[in-house]
Structures are given as C-alpha cells and as structure tokens.
Length: 400
Image 1 (cartoon, helix red, strand yellow):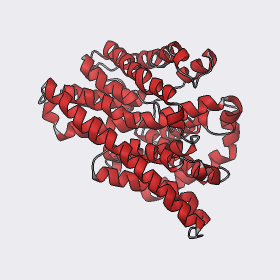
Image 2: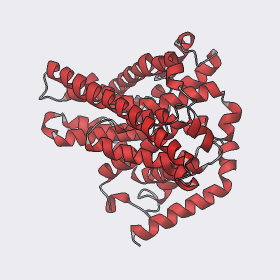
Image 3: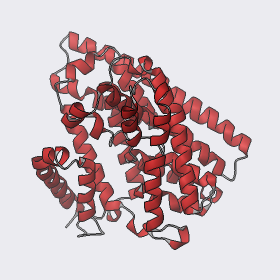
C-alpha cells in the first residue's frame, strides 16, 4: 500500500466517522477534536498497527516545520479577524500584562522546571522553555469557539485568550532567539545581544507588525471596493482571509521576517472596523477549513511522536521525569502568575475568571513549530552548539 492511497482513505474516514459523533464527544465526553485526532494518529502509526509511517516518505523535521507554519498562520489570522474591533488597542492593559510579565514568568518557570528535571544548563533550559512559552492558538479553540464555549465561557475571557494565543506565537521569537544566541559558542555576549536586538526585535518583530498593519488595511479597502462594485462572488469573499494568510506567509518567508505575527496583525487590521467579521459571522467556511487542517495536523503528529526517545539514559530522559515535569508545568507555569496579576488585568473581572484563564495555557502546534525552528537553526551551524541541545529538545516538547 502506498501513502498516496492510504493517507486519504484514513483521513477521510476519520473525518466522516468522527463527524457523526463530534457533538457527543465534545459536549458529553469533553474531549477536544485535537486529542481524538492525535489518538487516531497513534493507532494508525508505526507504534501500533503501522498503516502509516511519515518517516518513510517525508523528511519529518522539515515537513513538520512547514505544516505547522501554515496551520498556525491560518489560525492566528482567524484569531485576529474574530476579535472585536480595535480590541488590541482598547484592551492594551490586559494584553500588556499577558504578553509581558505573564509570558516572561511562563518562560522562566518552565526553564526552571526543565533545568531541575533534566540536568541541563539554565541556558539550554531557557531554549527549550521558549518553545513552550506561547499558548497555542489551535488548542485554544476548544474554549474560545463553539457552542459549549459560548454557553460556558464569558465573552471577555474568550476574547482575551483568543487575542493572547493569536499574538504570542509571533512574539515567541525573542524568547527563542535570546537563548539560541546565548548558546551559540561563536557569539560573544555583546554580539549575541546586539544581533538579538536588531535582527529579532527590529527586523522580525517591528517590520512584521508594520507589514501586517499595512497589508491588512489595504486588503480591507480593496475588498470593500470589490464588494461595493459587485466584482467578487460569495465564495471568494469567504476565502479571502485564507488566501491573505497564505500570501503573507510566503512573502514574509522570502524576506525572512516573522510571518506568524504578521498574519495576526494583518487579520486584526483587516477587521479593524468590524465590517468583514459582521459580513461573515453566519458563514462557517473558516471554521470548517480550520477543523480539517487541525485534524490533519494532529493525526500526523500522532504518527510521528518520538516514543523511543522518551526513555533515553544518555540524555537523562525517563518517563517519570517527563511526567513529573509535565505536572509541574501544568500547575506552576501559568496559573499562579495569572491569579496574582488579576487586579491589573482588566479583562478578568474576578478570581474565578483568572483561575480559568490561568489553568488554560495549552502547549501544542506552536511549541512543535518553535522546536523545529531551533533544530533548523542548529543544523546550519552544528559545530557551535552542544550536541545535547540538539537531541533533547524534540522529545521534551513532544511530551509536553
């Protein structure tokens, strides 16, 4: 059996069968489609019945990087579009707290846990923790979208979590490259900090923000003009944001800037006046496409989980270490700091909402994306990095 025949059959079969019981699974069993898709991937993967093994027909490292890039780009574009008009400006204090002290503490606490559990230097721990610092926009959908979320999660909390998960994947680059440059043995500390400032903050972050604002604004004006003169049909109107996300990823990759952050900013700029969001709120094309892409990714991830690396004496990795680290990350990474900062986070109106928001800080596709970026950067100059930095990052992030 060839992959070109097996993969479509399994993917289509899962989508159809899961679709028949999806409401029951989500609202009665409280299981996300990402978890169910990953379990299905494990079952059909090489560790179970071995119907599909991506290692046989793709370079899984590069494929995971690009697959994750487009999944995240489409999701953060959607997150930017679904936010209320001018949300990032009107709720700047909440966003400053979540993207400033909360994200920094999440990074440092995770690094401390990894340093404690895996006998790594603190710099190496910072590098791995930077992959897990952002919250995941794909997994965030379980509490910001859908009938159950709308019925049980207050809109102010949903909007705050959606905005945070949308933008902090793009803002994860400074944390990642801070540790990466410090670990690079060919860089002095001064050179590392200078490169971090001009290349990451100026070229990647600021430039992508400017491009996102401009492209989102121009796209909004062009779409309104096309709609006013009846030049665009309904199908193209609905698909416009998807095309915009793919366009931006390609362009930002050409100039090597932050494509994920640019997509979120462009999405929010695109719906700055709420026009596009109001026009498309009753059309579920975006949600359907998101669901198909996300299910596909988590099935794929289930087939490539590096089980054999979860027990590696040479790397000081053992199942009990991973389990204890995961529990500590779950309890300490986000919840305490979000609760402590409740009084200066206007979007959370009471401690109950803060506890919910603090508990919900998923590690998912974004973490795998950043892990593969690290692997790609290290592969360019392997002689400048300690070998353990290369070998330990993927198993830890995959488990978390």
